[in-house]
Amino acid sequence: MLLLNTDRWYYRVFQSAPDLIRALLPGSAAAATAFSLDPAAPGDRLYRFEALEIKELSHRLDGVLWPRESTGCAETGSPEFPVVLLEVQMHPDSGFHHRLAAQTYRFLQRHPQVVHLEVVVITRHQRHTLGPVQPPRHLRMFLEEVRSISLEALSQQADLDPLLNLLTLPVRPESELPACCQQILASRPDLDTVVLPMLVQRFPQLSEAEIMVIVGIPREEIRHTRAVQDWLAEGRQEGRQEGRLEGEAAVTLRQLNRRCGHLTGATTAQIQALPGDKLEALADALLDFQGPADLSSWLAANA
Image 1 (spheres, one colour):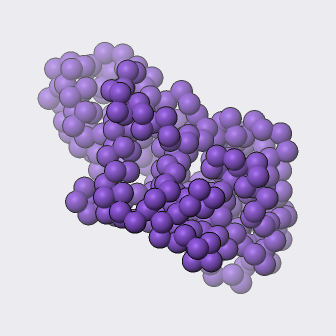
Image 2: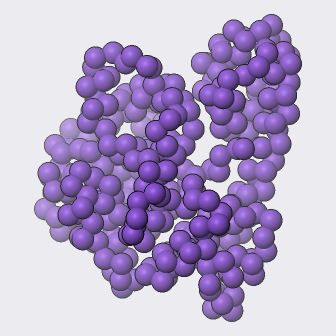
């Protein structure tokens, strides 16, 4: 199954409640009490979210969370309020750890004033291959300082805080989504513009009215809200796009299995996670493949 396009959704989550990052940092049990579930205090008192592009590499970081001016360490970070680099990685990618290290040090090069930095990576689970089995010593030392959050493990915690529960929506079984969404919106009704688009992606076959039933919101209450309507429309469009890409990936995989032999689960997942333009390029390139070595070379060059 093709993974949902979750990077943009997590961008919205942390844009809506950037203080949520404190619950994912070391000492999160104590930090979790610092953000409020009160809609009148929507979770941006301590941090602001920013998406930065490292122009030299043409790479856009998933997110950078900067402490607010009120913390007294807006530019440098502090042990209590560090600057946070956030990355979402939901599919296997053997080159991810190398890129993560490279972009982290490039970020520090461009922002030499930063003293206290945390790197947080959100993953679907810990079984994905994200780097070499035996990383070189310097990469290993870097990875020891990275905080990795497994959504699968997070979703299995009992009595999970509603805001943390929000992060698990892309990986929750469909049967658990109604109760989870209702719990989240009961505490933070302002997050409907984040919850609803994810439900539209998870249930592309359902109508808007049926989505409203799942989350327990009377449809007439949001019909007048333009922002919610825009999010629903965008979520529906992304759901249709995911369906189209899933079909293209299935056809490409069938052709590759005939030309290159049986593909491993990791290779299949890597191909399923390719964006549309890369899938089209692979569909053209595979016509010239002579065996699995050609596929491996193409993936290494285009991942």
